[in-house]
Length: 477
Ligand code: GDP
Ligand code: ZN
Image (cartoon, rainbow, N blue to C red; front, side):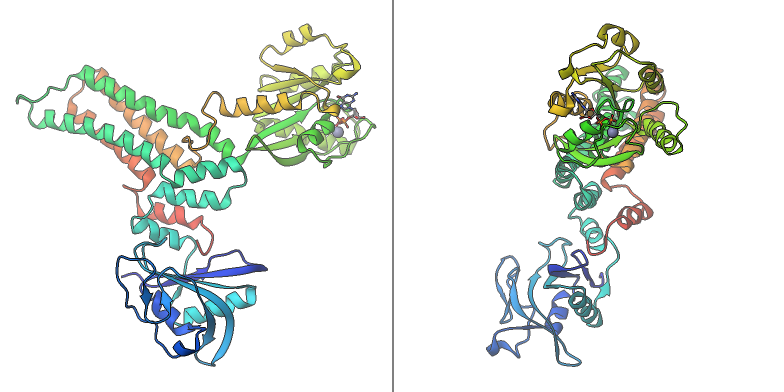
C-alpha cells in the first residue's frame, strides 16, 4: 500500500485561492482530523468512510459528500486554533487524478495560510509529495500512460496556443494511439514469424519474405513520419527562431515593431542605432516565434557596434529562418552583399523594403545571387507585406504538414530518440529480410522495435527513466 502524500498544488505567491492536495488511503482520515465543517449540528460529527461505492454525490458520514465542496475551517487540533477558512472536497478512489482517495483543500492563497495548513496536514499523517508524484501515481496506477503524463508537464509549461493544443492532444492519447497502432502491426508480424519458426512444416499460412518485407516497410514509413514531425514539434514547443538582418536603416526595427504591433524596439533615423541583439517572443498564427533583431553586419571600428555584430553572427547558427531586409529604394550596396555572403545557404526570406519610395533595386540580379531565397516586397513602416511574411512563416513551420490542432507531433526529445532507435532496429530487420536471413534473427530486431516503441508509452520502461521523467515536474502536480 502506498503512503499518503500532500503538497501545495497551486503556484506560490499571492492568489485568490491556493489548493492543498492530498492523495492516498489516509486522505479522508486526515481531512477528518484537520477540517471542521461549518454547520453547528454536525460540529462533533465524525466524517466516516461510509459511502455507496459506485455513485457520485453520496453522503459520507453526515457532512462530507463525495466530490462536493464543503465549507468550513481548518483547525489545529493541538492548539484549537483556526488556521484558515476553506472549501474542502473529498474524491473517492478510483475516479480521481491518482486513482487513489484524493482531498483538496481550497485555502486563502497566501503563503502563510498554505504553509500552516500544509504543515498541519503533514503532522496528521501525510508525507510531503515529491515533484510530479501525483502524476507519477496516476501513471503507476494505470490512469495515464507515460506520453500522457509527459503531456501534463507540457500543458503546465506551455507558452503558446499551439504547444498547448499539441500537449492537450497528447494527454487525450493521440500519440499513444499512433504508437499502439504501430505496435499492433509489429505484433502481427511477430506472431507470423514465431509461428513459422515453431511450425515450419505445418500447413499454416506461410510467411513469404516478400510479404514480410512489404509489411515492415509500411511500418517503417509510419515511424519515419513520426520522426519527421519532430522538427515541427520542436518549433511548436520552443519557438521558431527568426533572425532579422540588414545593414543599418533598412527597417529592421520597424519590422520588429510591425510584428510586435507595439513599440518595443527603438526606431530611429540615425544609422547604426540598434546595436545589440534584441530577442522578442511573439505568437504568429498560434506559433511561438522568437524574433532576433540584429545590428547590421558590416565592418566597423565602433566597439559597441562590434559586439552587436558578433552577437548577430552567432544568432545565425541558431536561426530557423533569416529575414534579410534590403532598402528597395536604393541599389544593392557592398554592405548588402557582405551580409548575403554571411547568410550563405541558410533558409532566407528577403524583404525588398521601402517599396513605397519606388523601386531602384535590381530584383533579377538579386535572385541570381540568392536563388533559393523567397522574396517579398514590403513597406514595413506602413504595414505593407506583414501579412505575407506571417503566412510564409506559418508555411515554413508546418512544411506541408497538417496545421489543425490535434494532429500528432513529436515534441519530446525522449520520444524522438526512441523513435530513432526503433527505426534503426527495424531497418536492421528489413535488411535481413532482404538478404534472406533466418527468421530467428529477424525476429530479434522486430521485437526490439516493438520494445523501443513500448518505452515511449511506458509499457517497457525502467524505473530510472520513470524517475527522470517525473523529476521534471513541479511540486504539487
Ligand atoms: P534599422 O536600422 O534597420 O532598424 O531601421 P529602422 O527600422 O530603424 O528604420 C530606419 C528608418 O527607415 C526609419 O526612419 C523608418 O521610419 C524608415 N523606414 C522603415 N521602413 C520603411 C518603409 O517601408 N518605408 C519608408 N518610407 N520608410 C521606412
Ligand atoms: Zn534598428
